[in-house]
Length: 128
Image (tube, rainbow, N blue to C red; front, side, top):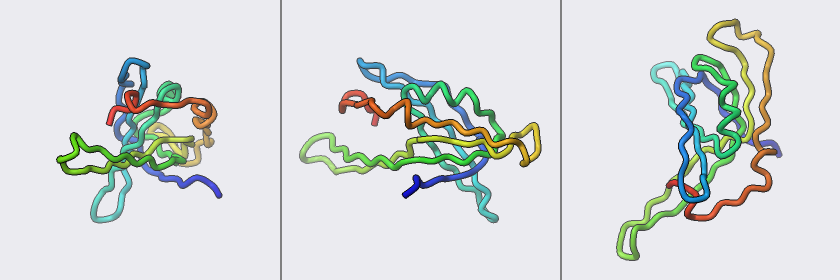
């Protein structure tokens, strides 16, 4: 089974942020999808070494991103409300077109999963 993908136009590329004592890194990229009467905005996280691979992206690029969903449960204390969060973590991406060229631009693939294959994270490293 192949990984799910999401496509859209890159509208935001944030700087890399570092969290925790072990230096967990995260970089957010936001895609815009035109849905006719409204736009859909999809925030995607690139983590650790994959943060540097975002340097190949530009605002305005049309991309397709393979991803995995990560969910997390959070509760401040036993009597507090339980909250659930979901994050989209990028595994790979391909540029389908760029703001400075036509949609027939050669596809560029970036495999991100290999860089994170052996990484493990503790609860302290993850910033949500």
